[in-house]
Image 1 (tube, rainbow, N blue to C red):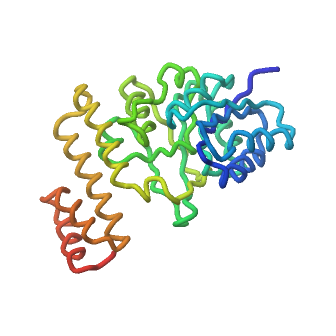
Image 2 (spheres, helix red, strand yellow; image 1 turned 120 degrees about the vertical axis):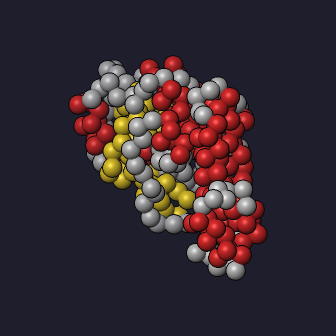
Amino acid sequence: MKQPFFSVIIPAYEAIDTLEDCLDSVWSQSFSDYEIILTDDGSSDGSGAFAEKWLEEKAVLRYHIIEQENKGLGAARNAAIAAASGKFCALLDADDLWHPEKLSACYDFLKSAPETAVLYHSVENFGRNHNRRPTFPIKSLKDLILLGCPLVPSASIIRRDLALEHPFQTNLDYHGAEDLYLWLELLIAGEQLHYWPEALSYYREEGGMSSNIDEHLFKVNNVYEHFYQENHISKQDFERATQRKYYEAARFYQKGGKHDKAQQFYSVADAKSLKILGLRILNALGLSI
């Protein structure tokens, strides 16, 4: 059997409630030259068995299910990538979905630029919110840490040889920010991140970072700290990047009406910013804007 163009990489942990919709979105692709590699990362809800039954019932010809003890998202993705045979790995988390033309559109781009390291595209939120996530071109490491990370794993494709050379972090200090670590590592290695403006993936905004933003912020700061200590980020940019994350957390809590939590983060965000000062005053008045 010839090498597939794409390997669809799905890490699954306790994903029984969302896995069918996720797999259906792959099955619905107009482009068919792909294989599915799914890692069941120690689920207790039968995620792996469900996926295997679904794949058999759909008569999917090219797939592989990996069963492993729970090792975390980075290790689950790495195991699937190691077992993959496609030229490019298309990442898809088990609670997210794809537009039916996602692989077809990305194939057209990648055939014209086969040297591409990473291709990423816009994303629509669903679940808690229904809107397009801010997505924009990233040209440098500085862009990524100061403008924010617009790359969502389920909207990212990475060349498989590069993914093997630069595996996802399994260090729990970076758990939940493994993808940010990888994008920074690739930029430092001189690789380019190519942006496609069309929204081709759907990100489920339920749980995850939205329900545990403090922990996510801590892990992101661990990533920044690592690259700062390695002298890839200047002290000024490190401080600015950290303050930007504090601002994002403050805005999240203010919009949700959690004004005490918002005030904690505003107090450590950029004290010189008139915008932040104004928002901090409004937050102190109990205004959720």
